Length: 150
Image (cartoon, rainbow, N blue to C red; front, side, top):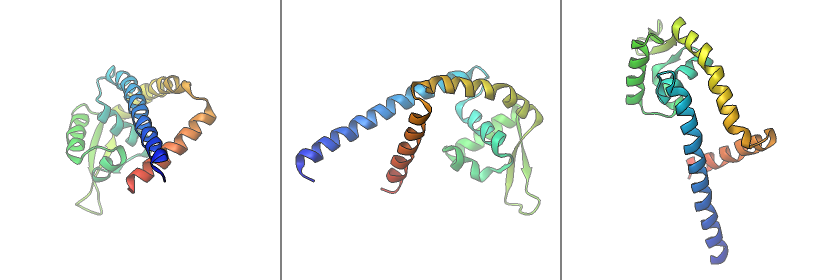
């Protein structure tokens, strides 16, 4: 690649980074505002949403599924347990494994707040039509996978 095209590609790469970063921040701000009104942190909500949709999960796997550190997971699991939204359940077959499982109270909370949150996220994403959303998902996944393997 000659230096003219290399320079243009570098500028486009930097612009894409800035645009993605700004869009992510604005969208996450909307999400945080939606979640905060229910007295939950982003991480607490992410843990509850994961359990709500996937069911009981080993504590050790939660961090990788919602992209936070294991120390943060332990802290947030403790907080959610104190609030009565989840419980720790020992694995009957392997003493090294403990599951996080939603309580009835946690499920009732998500039954109530998740539809509102999903509706708000749909509203925020209305800047793209369905085809554009599919294309964006495909392209951003492709970008993320390449970055992960670089």
